[in-house]
Image (cartoon, rainbow, N blue to C red; front, side, top):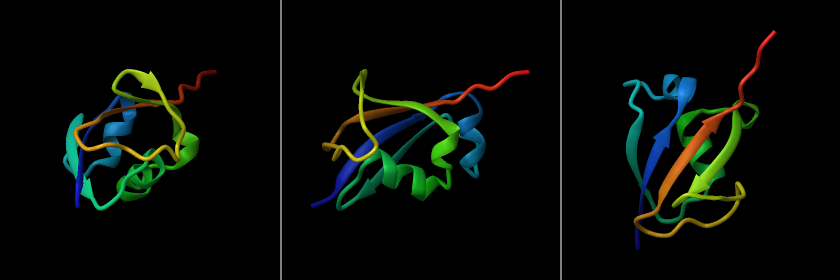
Length: 78
């Protein structure tokens, strides 16, 4: 059984998608935020926070079919 999730990439995280999309759909037999980061090549150090359906989540929380994941970037300054 496959899990389909919508992933919203905020800020500069969309640069990790080849097509520079801000929203995409992923499917796999099992997904977590950590596996999404790995699939997209996003280093964990670039992530400030992840939410699933509007609630903060851990990197290893299994995702349910139809979930919406938002990935928010770490912001640096100087």
